[in-house]
Structures are given as structure tokens and as C-alpha cells.
Image 1 (cartoon, one colour):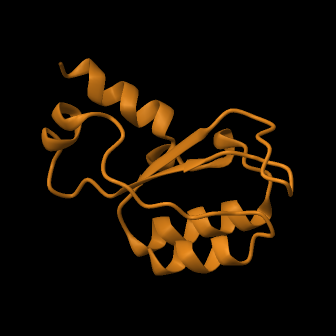
Image 2 (tube, helix red, strand yellow):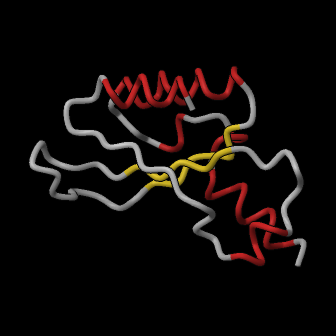
Length: 100
């Protein structure tokens, strides 16, 4: 989280919000102990008006993954296809749902 705080602090209209799991109690309590951190990013104007859908990133489990995400956020492009597969929440959440 310290790396994420630092990169968000340097974004002109960014806010870092930490919360409990947004996937629901059953989904979160059933995950493994090394579940990592999920990030939700929403591109906005400087007045904080959303201009695109929320993007889910993660889970971020290691320092290396955190560094990759911080560099991706700082670059400002926010194209999920440029993230490594291990950080693409759309792919990772789909994999988990197939196990049900």
C-alpha cells in the first residue's frame, strides 16, 4: 500500500480509498490466504467527473507486482491489456468463478 499511496499522491486528481472486499462476503472469505489487494480505478476529469468505467486491477500480491501497477498508473494510459495477465482482474475473477 505505501507504493500505491505514493503514486496516487502524485496524480493531480486521484483519491485512494481503502475498504473491505467489494465482491461480497462469500467471495472474499473463500479466497486463499495470499489474496493480495484489488484496485479499482476510474478515469475522471480534474473536477472528478467520471469519463470511463471503473477498471479492476489485481490481485496485487508482491512488491514486484505493486511496482508494475504503480508504473502503469503513473503512465496514465490505463489500458488493461498492457498489464501482465496476473494483474488483469477481468481474467483472474473469471478464472475463480469457473471453480464454483
